[in-house]
Amino acid sequence: MKTVVKKYSELTVPEFYECMRSRAEIFVVEQDCVYQDCDDCDYEYHVFFWEDDSESVNGGRVHAYLRLYTIEEEPLTVQMGRVLSLEHGNGLGGRILEEGIRVAGDVMKADRLFIEAETYVIGYYEKYGFRQISGEFLKDDIPHVQMELWFR
Image 1 (cartoon, one colour):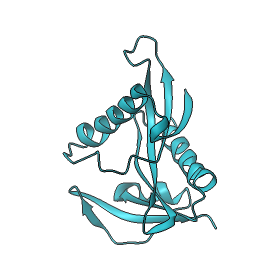
Image 2: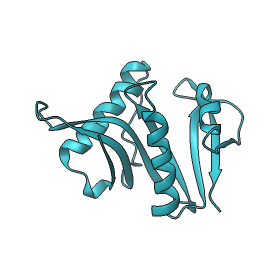
Image 3: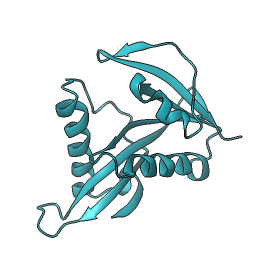
Image 4: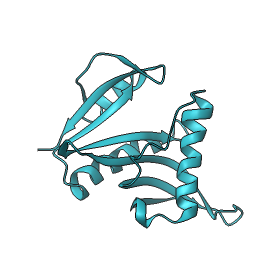
């Protein structure tokens, strides 16, 4: 499995399709949540683990994924979202999170990384340096909190 970090404009059609397929698999089907996934925040960085598969129509599969984009009102703040792993318990989630943190800090030169995390994973994100900065709120009927990680 290889790590892929690309801007939206660099993605191949199969890569983008597989990213969106994985997002729908987790956030729409698994979580049984109907929401507008395409929300104009996909035009910056996509970070994912890609496994080549010659048997697949698209030639591969995304196994873990996240996206990163700059918050317009705060140019040194990057927002991370759509964090997912198709396989649980094998470390892929932590690896994709570490890679996203690296890209936000080293490539995008962020001072701050911001996320809206589901409440059940607060402790998980805290292990990677994030801290909670809001109370609980509902987003698409799922409890979330805002969290941040400072680089500098």
